[in-house]
Image 1 (spheres, helix red, strand yellow):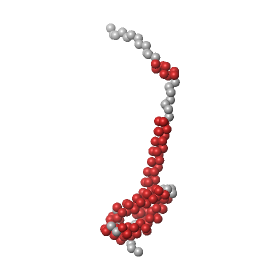
Image 2 (spheres, helix red, strand yellow):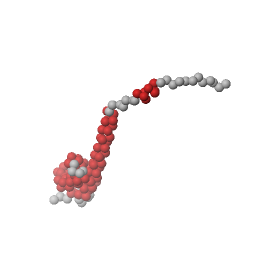
Image 3 (cartoon, one colour):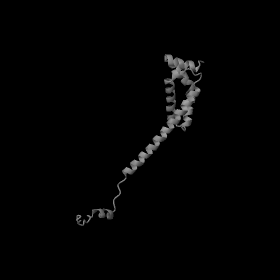
Image 4 (cartoon, helix red, strand yellow):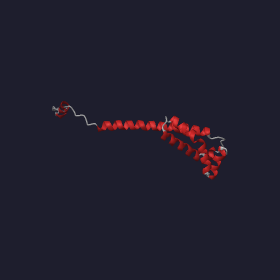
Amino acid sequence: MTPESELLRLYARQGDEAAFGEIVHRHINMVYSVAWRIGGGDTPLAQDVTQSVFADLARKAALLCHRATLGGWLHTSARFAACNAVARQRLRHQREQEAATMQQILSTPEVEWEPWCCASFSRKPTVKSVKPWA
């Protein structure tokens, strides 16, 4: 079994897809389960987080190839990515609720003014003649 650091080095230097695939194969269940647990059992969210974590690993392969094992880095990355995804989802839900409330408020018919109120505005004010200063 090839060490993870060697597999990552092969991917970073030579673009060896098989080496990266082996890393994914070794860790995908752990990354997915972390994301699924933090996401409250939300399968699509866990899938998105898992893809994001491995995309980050691919981008940072040259920086991480000196590590003996990647499990800790992948676990931490999955945890942070899942927490951020949950926070974005909550914020999106909150904004959708606010938008729905605003839409409901704007779609209700306007309140009619009471007749007595309108009548008081329709009267013309009386103006007394004002004498200028002498």
